[in-house]
Length: 444
Image (cartoon, rainbow, N blue to C red):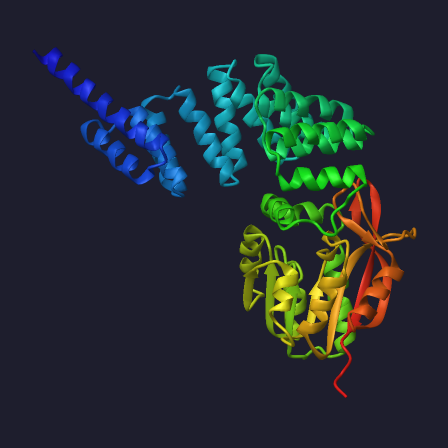
């Protein structure tokens, strides 16, 4: 009779656990957490309930609870491989790389054939700067599972970093074939093909992407850039938002590795134009991104406004504490809606996503108070063409000095200075830009 009661209790716990897991899979986290706790009322040491409760807590943003629940599951079942691996994932998401690495290494000790843990360990090693060890871990994951899409993609990124573009292309293509058909994976393949000199293959890869997602803004813009024909007059809102939302988390770190100078150059130009360290200006940071210009400009601003299309970039900008107001909006439309509102408008590496500068420059002129300053960067095109600008394969536009000068004049702005400077490095080469200072004529 006791055996039948224990069996009945176990069946009841399993039934409740299955109910919780169904809720969890459907995204109903709070109800799932409540039902997992019901299982633990019957059996506080139920390892699966503890494990899944930890995963649900992590998905809800309760990282410490997640660690506590999964750690308890591992005290009950020390060789619970999936719990160990997932604990590593949670530590990794918190930036606790040493702890994550220990979890993955422990899984590999228990189950050497666990390909996911080899791949995850490789990601940790890469983050620690141990590139050769990371490559070995990804290769081991692929030896165990030749169709491990993430390991292919991660190894491709290592080859791309080392400028071994043909090898990178092989692994990016293998990742897509294995099912990793994400924007990140497809964009990586196109970039590697282009960098290896296979422009036609890169366009073919974009066409394959567009067969699956016919209106994807990044694929459409990249194809226009690579084909160098029928280029749009500016990058679409969808392209700009998709690119910068995707980059928001790593944007500052990425640019730091490129010797990025545009924010400092723009700040220096405005400080020189104002000629006062105590100015109290109404300033707009047009295309503020993560807010790299904000702290540099704030000493001149009685009120600093930022505008950007990317909500994820705006969230990062808010964390700087430099901005008095932030708006998610398309730049030209925002300027048109704020006539005569600003003493200064700055823009670091935003107008490089515009080919035709007429409309945005005219809107900027109208948004300035008389005597107001417009300071911005664009990439420099050192060869003349009929349009005065071109769309480069990197997806950004470059402009000639003459074109920029003519556009400023057409917009009713006075060109104060137009200097060539190095904005950053890209693919091992300096990227030249124009640092432009224009002003709206003072009222008569």
